[in-house]
Image 1: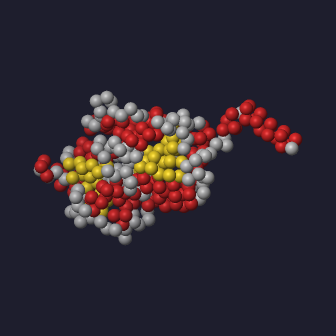
Image 2: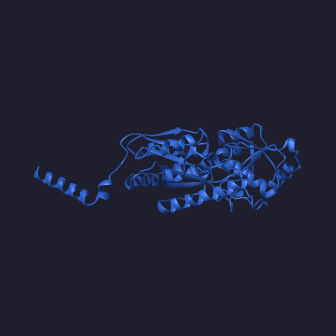
Length: 335
């Protein structure tokens, strides 16, 4: 008993002398919620549920993980909820670039500085899609048709939300080519893809993961990817094409580039030990076969950042979005 008492006393003294050591043992004590500031079926929702499944399957955490969608107000509901969860280490946010676009477009009192950056999981690509039965074989075909359409019969470009990533890309496409589109907003990327399959719209700028099943089935056709280089995934998705076969939009004469954040954040007031726990957890997630399958099937850019590098990247992206949205006329009066 004396030996045990001495050992406990030594541990207590070590903790008092080195608080960081004492904090290093932190782990969740109740279920962890991942808040998705977007609708079900979209890229952020799918990634959150894959993370949830991986954590559960591989027993990476003692506590369960729950995914909750809070898409109201273009994600404002989710952002404000996490902002209010100060010092609550059991709430996570999986964010996309609406972390920038929603506050800039609406003026809601939220900034990325109101939460705690944990880890960039990946960057998501955007692809210009059309229905496979449409006459548009190249981006130039679509642009020419859009230019030729009368003002009362413009081609319809579907996307997620208003003044969000998809409409920003559509505005940039118009600025780069002179082709006007009627932008039609929907609640999520899954719904956007279904609308294009049903020929209710003429084109979309959807993420790969949100349209890949329809491409594989032969319902949709990719025209170009909004990145500076072709996607690296060479495995065939259809009988004749893989992601690497899709030209960049720049190759096709459209000088528009855009990638979207897929990152994990905590509420304000997170401690280094809590951040460290989730950083380590997400590193383990990224090392699993299931994660590798997700990034390959969804053609993600696998860039990952954490710590000060991630914070600096987020700060730069906020300013980039401010410039893009100002050019498109999407900024709220308060911004």
